[in-house]
Length: 147
View 1: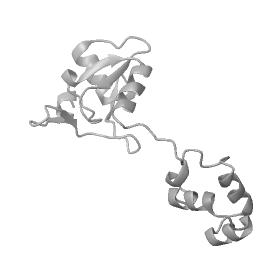
View 2: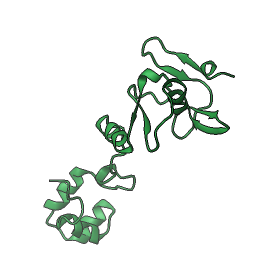
View 3: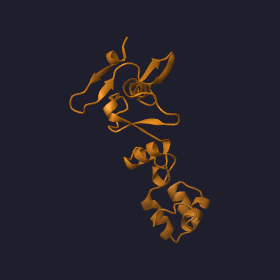
């Protein structure tokens, strides 16, 4: 089946949305080309613009992972791809403080613990944490990002 049979133009955005196989983990279209599995947007580049230079990445202007419209694609480096991702807020943010999945405390808890003059063991019991954790919070060893 020809490449063109696997996408549909989306009139509002101009994207060509890949309808065939999409990788579950990434959302990028996949297709077989030259007897190997490739990302569909890379195959679109090859078919419409020519070979991809060694080390080059095919990036999306439209930020639609399933788009294979060559007008929405451009060549770049891994560094440019990372910069584009980060500028658009799509990168993984470091998980620390209350955003970490194991966090028991909030910023408000940290401020309260730092100003609490009771014994550290008593504070620890109130918050369900260890005395050492209270010590690290009060000495600003941990939770340094909280003023």
